[in-house]
Each structure stands twice: as structure tokens, then as C-alpha cells.
Image (cartoon, rainbow, N blue to C red; front, top):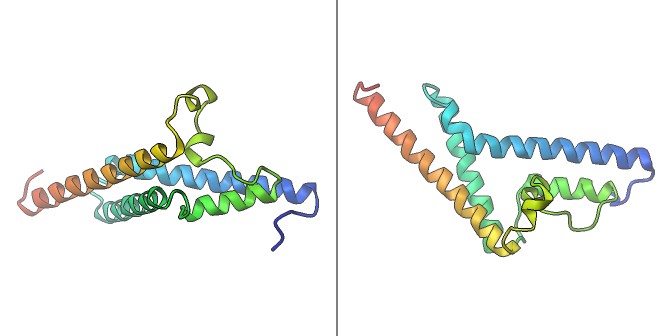
Length: 144
């Protein structure tokens, strides 16, 4: 598969697809963060949410540990599509593309940012696991 599309129509399609993948990526991150609030009385959704938070914690930790050599598959797809659309070789990380420029100037260096994101993902996973365990124990004992 060539890295540079043939014409402007191909570039526009690649850019639209990259934006769609970014939307899916943001939706996944939103689900990781807020899924705990949406899964009460829904055990299947709770299991799915816990699996998603575990994946998020795993992939963000791998990204931090490898200094960005291992990244989320959605990030890889976004980058490839952006390259095909004619964007620079190293597009900014997801978190930077979604923040206003004024906020971006005050962020820590990339390595610290990767570790901070990994810590946040691990915390979301741990909190979710504790809450789900508490819910299961209450349900098992006949509690609310």
C-alpha cells in the first residue's frame, strides 16, 4: 500500500477516515472514563467496560515504558491515514490534537505526559475494578 495517495480525492478520503478513526478513539477514551457511571445494573456492560479499561491501562503503560515505540492500534491507523492525507510524518499525539493550543503550551514534556496518561488509565481501571467488586458483593448479599 503506497504511503502517498495518487490525487487530492484520495487525500481528502484519507483525512475523513483519519477523523472517523479519531472519533472512534475519543469515544473509546470517553467510554473508559465514564463507563463506570453507565454500567449499573448491567453486568455485561460492566465486564466490557472493565476489559476496555484494562486494555487502556495496558496499552498506555506499554507506550510509556517503550517511549512511544508501542502505541494503540487506533493511533497507528490514525497516523497512517494522516500520512496518506499529506500531514507531517509525526502527527501530534491524540491528547495534544484534542486540546486547545493555550493548554498545550503548559503540558509537561512528552515522556512525563505519557507516564501521566498511563497512571490515569491505571487509576481508572483500578477504581472500576473496586467499584465492580463492591457491586458484586452487594448483589450477592442482597444489598442495593
